[in-house]
Each structure stands twice: as structure tokens, then as C-alpha cells.
Amino acid sequence: MAFTIDAVAQQVRNFLLQDQGPAGRERVRVYLQDVVSDQEFANQYLDDAQPQRRVLYEDADLGFAILGHVFKEARKAPPHDHGVSWAIYGQVAGVTTMDGWDVVEAGEGTVRLRDSIELTPGNVRVYNENEIHSPRREGPAKLIRIEGNPSQNPPGRVWQPVQ
Ligand SMILES: [Fe+2]
Image 1 (cartoon, rainbow, N blue to C red):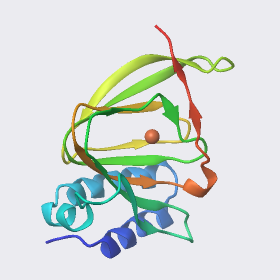
Image 2: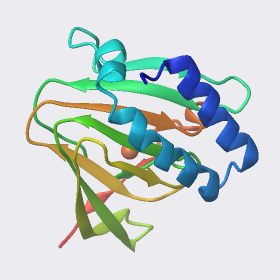
Image 3: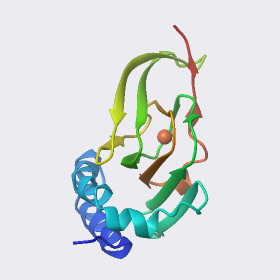
Image 4: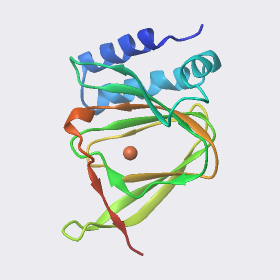
């Protein structure tokens, strides 16, 4: 059965209404694995001609937003967190390597690489408040991403990697 954005938004809402903390996000993560594996959903909501970032749904009540991302070429973001917000990354096509970082010196804003995971199509990962991460891609990719509270999220913080 193909998912629709309205049905997905309603289901995410229900999970978050039950628990807006990490446990509720984990239920969203598990659910999204099926959504991002649905080729019909991808075809309908992730258009090759769209901009890199497109808002598919915004929830004025709970504050979260569902975004569709279509990246046409390789890209590497710096280590960052989302401040008081959280984010869920769901891979639809291509591969995203997610680096995870530990703080070395908060005052100086330095971090050290802790681990790297690969998100392949169907994989979904939650980043909770203040969790430092950086996505990189060797080629084109498509993602569904949920931002927990983007309105409280002027840009979070960008960190400086050290050895
Ligand atoms: Fe992020």
C-alpha cells in the first residue's frame, strides 16, 4: 500500500502526541523505515526537478515539519547540532555517511570523530537534541527528514573538527 503525506503526517502526530521525547521519536523512526522504502511515495513526493529542500508538511500544533530532500551531487556538511530541536533522517535513495562527534572543548567549539554509519535506502536515524553529526554523500541522494521544532532552531551550532 502506498503511503500519502497526509497519512504519514497523521501517524507521526499520533506517535508524538503519545510521547514527544526520545521514545516517541523511536516509534516514528521504526514507522518511517516502511515509508522511505515505499517507491510510490518516493516517486510522488521527491521530484527530481524540485529544490534541494522542500517542506511537505508542517504541524503548527506540535511544531514538527516533514521535509523532502533531493541532492543532485556529492555534498559534505560540517559537524553540527540542531540546538533544542531534534531531527530524523530517512534515506530513500543513494547513500549518506553520517559521522558522529564527541565534544572536545565546548568553549572552543571543537569535536572529535567518534563513529561513522552508513544510511542506505530504508535506513532511518534519530538525532536528539544537541547530538552532533555531519552527513556526507559521494553522489546523488534522496531523503525524508523530520525536524522536531525548526521554528526554535536558528541554525543550531556548527563545530570545528580536531584530530
Ligand atoms: Fe542535521
